[in-house]
Image 1 (cartoon, helix red, strand yellow):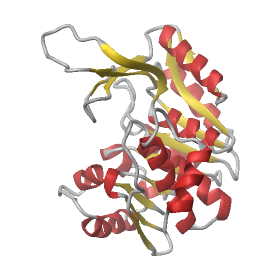
Image 2 (spheres, rainbow, N blue to C red):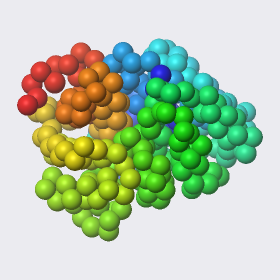
Image 3 (cartoon, rainbow, N blue to C red):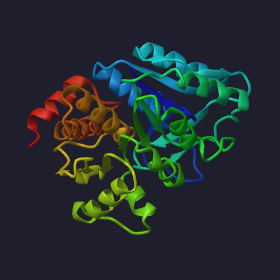
Image 4 (tube, rainbow, N blue to C red):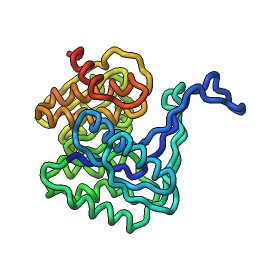
Amino acid sequence: MIYTVTFNPSLDYIVSVDHFQLGKTNRTRSELMLPGGKGINVSIVLNNLGLPTTALGFTAGFTGQEIQKKLTFLGVRHEFIHMETGFSRINIKMKDFDGTEINGQGPAIPDGAVKALLARLEKLEDGDALVLAGSIPRSMPESIYRDILSRLQDHGILTAVDATGSLLLNVLEYRPFLVKPNQHELGELFHTELRTQEEIVPFAVKLRDMGARNVLVSMGGQGAVLADENGGIHRLPAPNGTLVNAVGAGDSMVAGFLAGWMEQKDYAHAFRTAVASGSASAFSEYLAVRKEVERLLEKMP
């Protein structure tokens, strides 16, 4: 079983607005209300690809109930710890302005809820996989990802971490199976700007040398780079297609990599599946489905 943890899930309100103007009343041309959060996105894509998955984390209030309701509708198994105090955040994403969004803060997480989640994670067994992805609420310690991997280091599970800054750096000593920064996040870790695959390779290798077993770097329309634990360097361009919605494309790559690895235990295949999954999401209104991933895989080198 692949488990994902989303500490700060959301309802993503994705809108298109014609001729948006500041200081004016703007009306939507289209709108979607979807369950969001990086770990949740990973679980949805894994489910679409036919892999068993369980989404873990915290929800709160009426928005948290709606997140769970929508995941149930999508057929995604979930075991969230629900809190009646506060409410899960709503994130507004402007579809016509790529990268423009307003994200909520999320609820405060009490110590008792954190302990309950840690107790649930202690039940993971040899052969399971765990994905830690996304930001954490302000009420939680910056060491939480590290604390979890420390507790689970002898459980024989695969771990994947999709996070930024210290959240990522603090887990490297526990040899996570996969980390997935994008090119900008990787550059920020090393205080530089990375523009091309050639520039990314040495820094992906450096991050691998710091402890990550496999480093997958997403580059949007420029494709991706993988530095695998066997010393291999893999590069792929992005498949041809029309960008429809970039939300969740990076998360879809994490799901695709895990799915590809579990299918063939081959890093080249896992990398191709990751790129196909990320692209299938980018070319869709929502997240990647198996049919589109397979279609893109057939066209990839």
